[in-house]
Image (cartoon, rainbow, N blue to C red; front, top):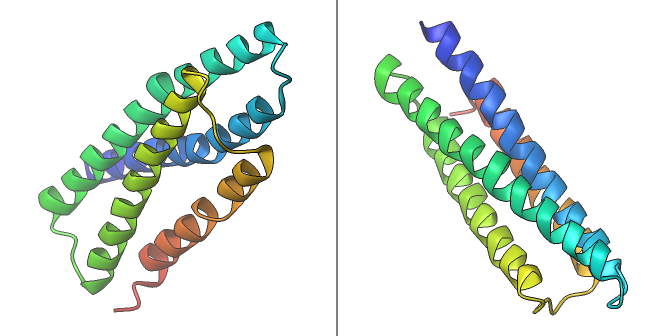
Length: 141
């Protein structure tokens, strides 16, 4: 049973991380779309909404649920787990922040240019991903 739960956790985690990487990339393209291209703007709004609600949020919920199941059901512990959980809380905050930006785009209230979203695409997600994977693999404390 442990192997199944762990596999499902990994699948949903990878799906969630893919969404965390891809949504800011959609924001880059959305911010670069000319204001008079209503078809393009509406297409990006639809893609962003479907990615957030159809893929990212369910994957985040299932990642957290299976992670808690692994932790509580199988007794995984250690100091590294507390650090990992803190980083997961940062990922959840990033997830919520991306929704705030998505809502701004949906309401045509975007205040940022494409360069901001390029930085947002690269800077927060990759170090968090690497840190979490390192904590799980190395279990340094």
